[in-house]
Picture (cartoon, rainbow, N blue to C red):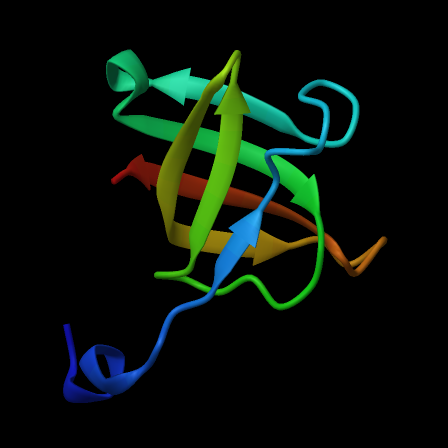
Length: 83
């Protein structure tokens, strides 16, 4: 991790009120310790956090990497790790 990354404050993006399978797609990997997510929203960057709902439980993941689609420009696919 570079010095710039440690000084930067990472944002949290709350997807807990969105509906899985409709508003976003999340695939559990490695027994839930990792995941792959496709969603819509701008400004999500590596090292940011995403909050998801699983039943009544809130889960926090950190963005490992993210790629935005060309069309629509706010659609993305990201690799996540559970925090």
